[in-house]
Length: 195
Image (cartoon, rainbow, N blue to C red; front, side):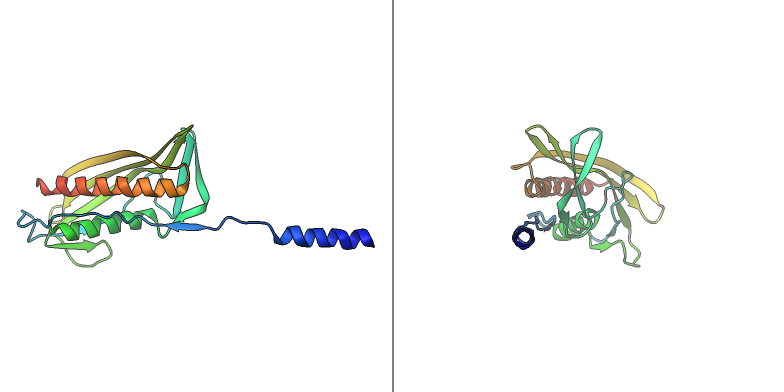
């Protein structure tokens, strides 16, 4: 009987003291300073920002990492606040709106007709870890389309490998924000050059 009571006491004490890693939720919110464009060829035009797509199926709330070229995993204790596609789209809309490159910047769910459409295809969006080397990998292709004719005006792929400060999700998120900031600024410059 003493052994049963002792065993129950041990299980009770150790069972209550196990630690579980809390789930951390992250966002993409690069602080982008953009000079307002005074006059552009698109200042009287509108653009709709399409929801990002991916042929690899990596547009989700899951944060992915890779230790080699043949395996991909997802963090158990970290995720995006909403899908990374929504976070990217929000970054594009906010930055284009600040730039005043277009007269109006509209989200894809709007029924409003626009002059242009900006599509984005996510090729890579993950945390790459190879030994002590840790990188945020971001690769996105943009398609700029005239809505009146559905003609592809131009297309460009932007790719970044940003070193992370740490090997964990926090370091990955910080580096990803840097990559998204660079990509967004370069995308706006690319769009501003016209056809």
